[in-house]
Image (cartoon, rainbow, N blue to C red):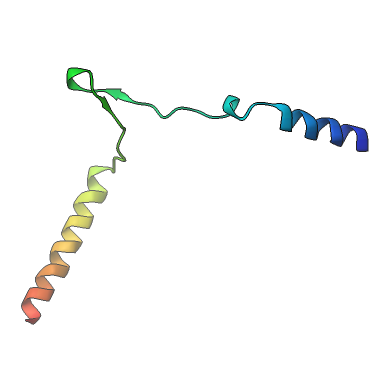
Length: 64
């Protein structure tokens, strides 16, 4: 059992770490520029967040 664990440990340490890495996907933009992908939220979630924030800001203005 000890020999198997040592062999597995050596194989993990010898394996190049670059083999496990992935490059992030990129999108080709206008004029050949590379755009980094952005985090996109569903429109319903963003709309609800904007509505809540507008209610909060209106309440702050009304208190003053």
